[in-house]
Structures are given as C-alpha cells and as structure tokens.
Figure 1 (cartoon, rainbow, N blue to C red):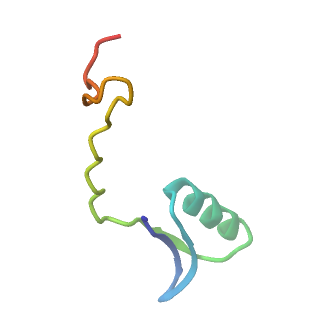
Figure 2 (tube, rainbow, N blue to C red):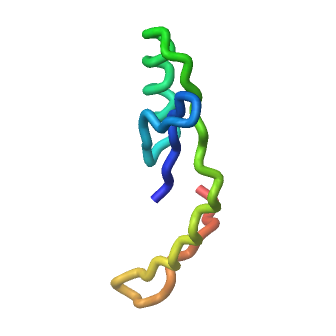
Figure 3 (cartoon, rainbow, N blue to C red):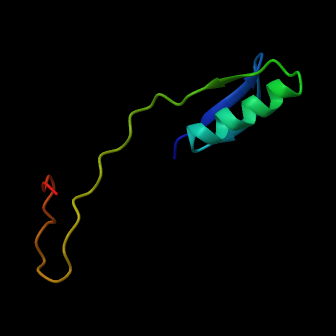
Length: 66
C-alpha cells in the first residue's frame, strides 16, 4: 500500500494511502498555522494481474474502444 506523508520538519504528522487525503490534511493544518508539507510516495505501483472472465475462463480484453 502506498504511504504518502505529511511532514513537519522531520516529524511525520499523518500517513495516507491516497495522495488527496494527505493534501487535504496538510491544507487544514496550514489553515491552522502549522507549516507542514506533503511528501508523496514515489515507489512504482505493482503491475495489475490479468483478470479472468469466470464464464469463459479467458483473460478479459483490454483496450476496447467504447
């Protein structure tokens, strides 16, 4: 799971799996006068597994044009 952090100097104030949650927390602390900043998690996302259609047993088709 990703861990985006809200930092105050070298201290972690908050960790969130979603970047938007960390940004909203930091914005709320800044409104209170706490000078914090967001450090996004830069680790690459793991590749997604291929999804199997339970009716046919075949992989689902990706890249269909809608």
